[in-house]
Length: 231
Length: 204
Image 1 (cartoon, rainbow over the protein chains, first blue to last red):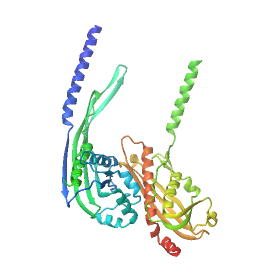
Image 2: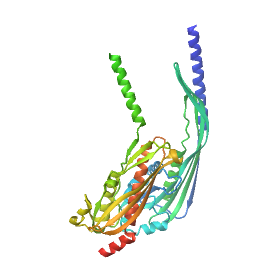
Image 3: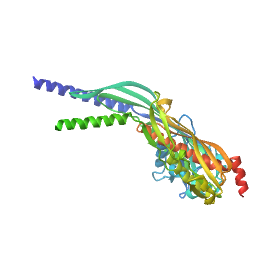
Image 4: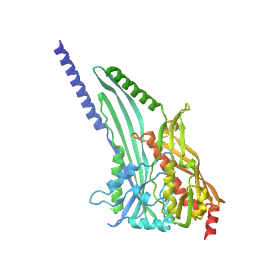
């Protein structure tokens, strides 16, 4: 009798694991991200080996601010590879040029940059860093369409979760490129990434997360690298 | 006997945990402030931090009127001015008393004070950010205590909510953001305050 029961339990466990595996495969295929990148070129670009760029996040908005982690992600990817560009870290640049690039004081237009560069201490620091382009990244990731519910329970014989949840992430970022030598905007790269994430739970919750912001970062960085190099 | 001892320990530990969970959460604001890159004024100023600024503390109350968060920012304000003022003036002397100004040989005495501090928590505003507003009263006095200028500076800082960020960390970062805003606003607008501008002109 005991042997029969343990066999039954084993069978149920096996079936549950198989179901979980199947769900994981189905939703891994489903948890994809769609990314669109647009480039708008206003002027010629190119960069010498001794020159660098700085990528800064816009933080003037009242409802959101560009996350420092996203800006750092773009910077790290732009500096990678054979065509990598020297990128000055955002925090280092802002602290070094304090108080000129704070949310309240940062130039909003290229004309403001021209006025700012008349300040000898600012122009000297920028020249010391060898900065050719300032890239302003502006955007955010929004989560919407949250659906489903998961309930978990713990008893004397063990615990488990059952249910299903899903949500959609939408990352929208713009990168405006300013040429420091001509005080002109030379172009804008926009990226829009969307993806659906799933969280099925059959005993164990299996997060199937769409890497929306990471894909937006990758796409933006690749395009930005090509843009600045003048490819 | 051993069982009674164990029970006592458990009861005491539970009580301590219960009391600590009911108490006010204290945030001692900590941040680092860069030195501003601005043209230095070739004058000597004394700076006087009153006890109100040194020990400044703000308490945020819950909707039921209980003390929820206590934000201590006096020391970090002194640290901020300690970073900003030496970049603005050729010589800075910290004064224990306002009456020490004449013997310190300074051109003026700067005495900042906090008039108002406001904190907005995401759980109350339903926004995805911690926000801090601070209103300061800045006074510039002659070494003999006479009036030179008196003006108001406001600052604002915010930091977004994140899944792994504690409330204390959010409050700290928003306050540091407000202090950086104060430093940038104060250092860049100092010479534009009409009375200060007249005083600077008289010193040339």
